[in-house]
Image (cartoon, rainbow over all chains, first blue to last red; front, side):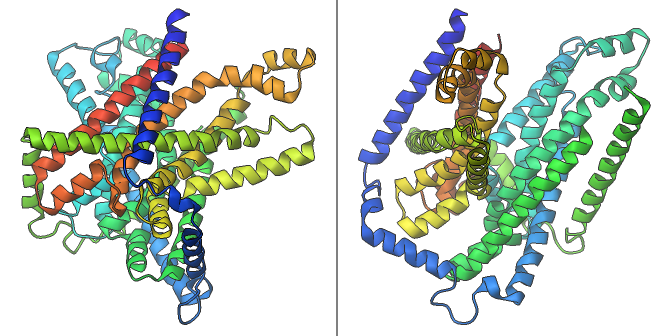
Length: 278
Length: 266
């Protein structure tokens, strides 16, 4: 009981101190911009920006009411959707290939047939890979990958895939670590080999959970797809960046609306598919 | 388990498998297989980037740059999370529908707040940052708002779910002792939900570190900004040093949240 209060309280106090120091640094460490929030000039500019989002000051019909603009944006949305699916394919295949040797109970514990230094080394290498790939944000991966891959949806998908590979791999190996060991011991006792253990012991228990995580991450990935599109030059993100720099704010609003629809659609699709996985 | 239930279970799995395979096949059509996916010189660049990973820039002067950038990123993340809690906590309490007892008011307030939370969190923090920088100018407060708004939307939803999942037993005994809904919240729901809420907020802080680092894309200082400067000069070994700092921070917070979670479950 005693340490339970200890860690919780210490965390609260520690975070409060960190937050205070951070706010102090932001507010007093230079021009924070907080004073601007209370100036009418700022809010006039905000209002102006909002009006331009709805097409004020631009010639022709605002993009939101223009069929041709909608067609272009719809095409980009489909491209973005494909980018997110491709990213999940990369992340899912990567995690599927690595998550079993990256589980502690497979590498060291009950489930391993041989406790060799090789399996221990494999465990640490894969785990380190997970930590590193998920520690680096998608956008930074994208910045690196555009040095290697041609612009388009592929570098975006690879960047999203690498980051989510680390997350999915960690989550799914934790699923294996939390599995009920009894059915697997029974399998082993009745003479199952490694492959049979995998096919009848681990996968039937772990796969549904892995799929659920995959679908959850898909919801996050579709949100991030616009951001990697900024640098990878694919889908909605590329067009958003261009329109922003051309100051075509009415097009920006249309792209944001498409983005919101896409996010919502993926949330619904993921919820439906998760129900099937259960 | 009755046979019919079992049958539907299998059918669902098959359908899911089919849908997933179709999605994979569909997405592969978008890859431009015939043209150059890897651009000329791409392989050489990849090799150079990989080689730099094994010789990160460790000169004292650059480490100092990295430490300063790390602190900026940490401070944006911490300030952003406090703002997110300030937004997400009250909205989460309303969205859980535990305060209002008349059904009509309850459902309207839940619907309105949930929709607001959904819009806040649907837009990625970097998109928020871009819009805010355009509207408010390039300032630390824009960065904090850009993190706080979408994270507030996420925290609000998760907090409301945690508040709803609290076991009913103790709440009923509070009600039977004559406590109002506000008191049930203050003495029943909150104390029971608080540890889980704290653990989730720390997890979000870890995500906030990564998010704060990429806000640099719109010109806000921090680790990501330095990464961009180094990338512009093609100094990959500096890039890796900065990324190792970021990964180190993330791991540190991950260990911390692991400790909190462990102390909650045992």
